[in-house]
Image (cartoon, rainbow, N blue to C red):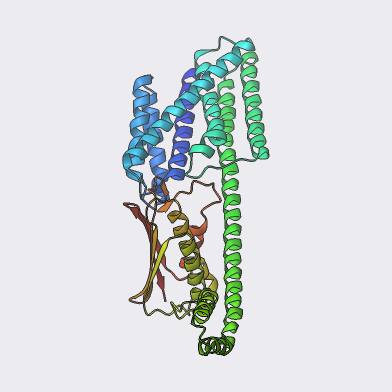
Length: 436
């Protein structure tokens, strides 16, 4: 009877832990198809109960097939990606099941080695089965939260600090010692209550490990978001200050125009002195000096004009064809920092993408009224984008790189707007709608 209780308890712990971790993995990689949290909780419970029933049959092949099919169906129907095929999502879930199986097998082998070294073998069948199930789950949790999840559990890799790795190993050592103590105690103490004591202790250790390791991950996510927010704010402030400096610089440069009459007098003198060649050269020289100082009046917004003229100069140096199509729009209701953030980041990203393509790079910017909104469309030549996450391309330059789009989305959100990104046939397109 005691062995049966231990066996059933081991199956319950095993199925619950694996299902919870698999759902965490899929949630970190993909978006949920539904917004009902209670529904996903009930699905986890239902899948766990189904797998418990299959595991009671004690047929390894049937067990593995049930795990693969169950999680494959969950991944296919309950999660989705904007720019990814379902087959890839399902394969990821199946591969993760196999990875978990390898981790559990390693855990069983490690436990057998430890028990052999401690001269604790042989154990009663029920006790040995329960220990195998729980200890293998302990190894699985440690491997997943320490190594697998930071590398594969999300679209941007997370680098743990040394202190975080030390904390993970402290948890692992503490849990391992507790399990060994329980195992040794079982070898020396006999009684009807021993199975229950062992069950309660091992169960608490496993679930405590899982949620404590998950809490560490939650704190890490919170820290990463805080760092990213600080970077976003810093970037926006620096960009705004930069364009204010550019505006001041242009204002100072325009003061040169007050001396135009003097330049005209010089040219008239050269002309009347029959020095036509000197006149032409002087005109060319003056034109060369004044041309970059006179901003094009592309819009009725001073900050945006400065920004656009700065990008025009940059693209000319890089031989990028930049063209604007500006409708009758009024951006005076927008905060100047938001204007700088939105257009500055979109154009910077477009310019960076154009520098990486072969052929003739180009950028097209269109701003037009759309009912009670303002529509912004930025198109540019681009290389193919292989990875997307939540409707945005995944940066290949680290977790804190490519935050410009996050900054744009945050600025657009202030006006209850939206941003949509797409890429097709070597052309990247960003469409932004802003409510006036």
